[in-house]
Amino acid sequence: MPEEPKIRTIKLGLLGCGVVGGGLVKLIEKHRADFRANGFDLQLTHLAVRDTAKDRGVDLSGVEVTTDPIAVANDPAIDMLVEVMGGNAVAVEAGCAALARGIPLVSANKSALARSMGRYAEAAKQGNTGICFESAAAAHIPIIEVLDRSLACEELTLIKGVINGSTNYILTFMERAGCEYEDALKDAADKGFTEADPSLDVEGIDAAEKLTLLAFKAFGAYVPPSQVHTEGVTQIGQVDIRLALELNHRIKLVAAARRGEDGLTLRVHPALVHRGELLADVDSEFNAIILEGPGFKELTFLGKGAGEFPTASAVLNDIVKMVRQPGTSTLPGFVRAAQDNSLADTSSLKLCYFVRLQIEPENANDVLTALAKLDLQVLSHAQIEYEGRNYLGVITDVLEESRMMAALKDIGNIQGLGQAPKFLRLDKDNYRDIVEREQSTYFGSSLER
Image (cartoon, rainbow, N blue to C red; front, side, top):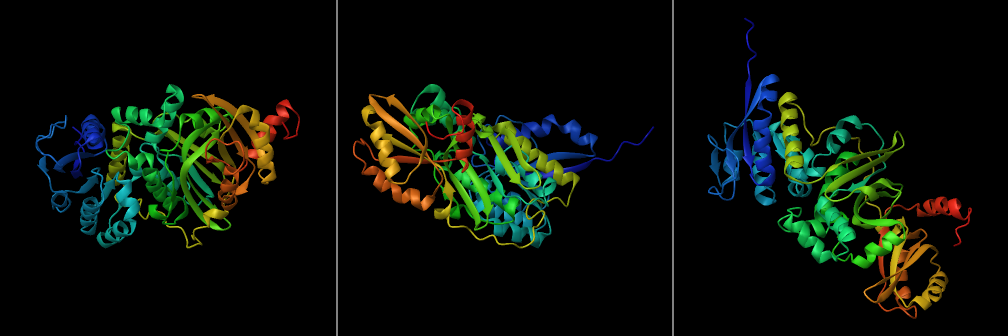
């Protein structure tokens, strides 16, 4: 009889057993036969939660359950620490404590990682061990693995995408249900798509933290979330949604990190995305990430960015990767040679802009003429009536951000406006190319309508 292969048992310490942690416990049990077929087994031995009396809906028999994350991190019996508890101070202390004594860490905590990356890196160096955080950047999209391995030596120029499923769900719901932001937020919260503190999603904070991690892997540059230009979706109204659709666009919360001649720019803000672009078709809680570089032009990744099993599965894959390849580490991972990672002046960024104006229908031509006198070239425009008022939406040609900001006051002084003008950026700075393509189809090559 052939001798059965010896099974290594990897003892896990787990911090947090909410939606993601509970999903992870279920997946570990589901895949146990797969682990054993590969010569190892995963055993959860120590768990930290806020309330030890709460029913987690999973079998925790044989697991030591405590309210002290530091005790789990310092447990001499664990072989790996898994952190899905969220928060910052305690999560960082526990993660670094484990790393410093040589215990590898798998984390889904983008906030702690993005804001304390230096501490994690130093602790990992001290303990000569590694950190994996695939689930922290875009749940089940394996973008960290791609950046760290498959594209390690590519010259990347842009990484952008829709990376917050909660706000994407809200904007999709507003469009489909015809409701305002507050009603869409309530629906998202009722379905469990938002963080316990929804402002982390709707103010763009979650996306900025993820962008910090993505930019670090894409460019080797650490830009903390506090230095990422961040705007949320709380000011988006139904009238903006409808005008965007009339202009053949959809509104998305877009996060983008770009390397240009002037340095790096990292931005999170609502943007109009042309319906001919892939990002425009990313709906509900789905995420999409686009990479650009001269070697491959463009790559796109699509998948669910939130939820119990998409995130838990990404965590489990990191655990298995570290078991099978003990030297695996996302931080720092493949280190890029030193280069200029200074931040560019965002006021000099050149984009096209959407401007929303409340007007009387008969004043539309006068307003467009006034915009032309302000040296703002309008590439496309549309009008809608909403709740008894008429609105004009225009898309401008490429402008420097500083020029657009300065022009808003002058636009507000145009006669016949009923409200202060409101603006949103466009996702791409080559909207003129899109217009020319559309115009040539119907009207020839001229931009004049």
